[in-house]
Amino acid sequence: MRGQTMRGVTGAVLFGAGLLGAGLPGGGGAAVARLAATPAFYTEAQAEQGAAIYGERCAMCHGAMLEGTYETPALTGKFVANWAGRPVGDLYDYLGRAMPQFAPGSLSGEDNARVLAYLLKANGYRAGQTALPADGAGLHRAVLPAPGPAR
Ligand code: HEC
Image 1: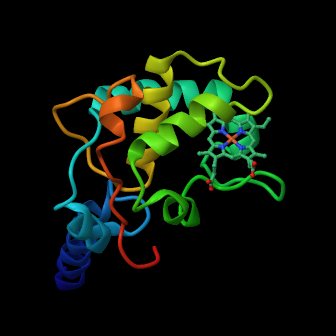
Image 2: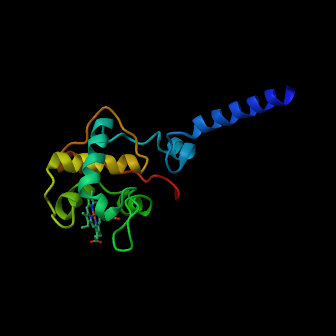
Image 3: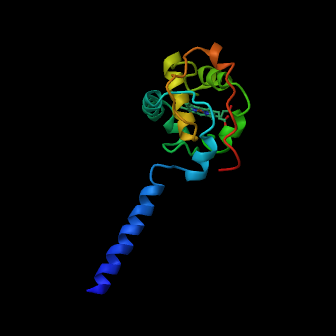
């Protein structure tokens, strides 16, 4: 009888710990705390639409989890280091100019912004109230902050 009760309590504690960790991909709490102070570049809705576009136009090369392959770079981790400290517009322009690799420039400006929003979200940058614009001008004034130490 007593043993039954103890198992019940332990189960509840483990379940609670699981909830705390849920919804935090990659770095978890520390990464979120680190990025909490960074500016928000995109909206949640944009990132959601971007995820769908990514699935159709990018995932076949970069992987469903952005993990890359031996011939295609991953779009998480080191990817951010390649672009952090530079205007977000550089990355936006690169996507418009070079991706998807078999049909560069085939996405509309809006879709480019959506995919970029998805990439930012996947790398721990936070969503805000203002949408990522679909023209380079404003994006060239906004510098992408470094996400912090290696994830
Ligand atoms: C046909 C395969 C293919 C498709 C489809 C593709 N890519 Fe790429 N992508 C590549 C390759 C290969 C590279 C490396 C290019 C190079 O080094 O010049 C690359 C590079 C990149 C980079 C730069 C990575 C870095 O570390 O700097 C980004 C960002 C990117 N792709 C995003 C996208 C997005 C977003 C899409 C979908 C709209 C997409 N790619 C579709 C093959 C592809």
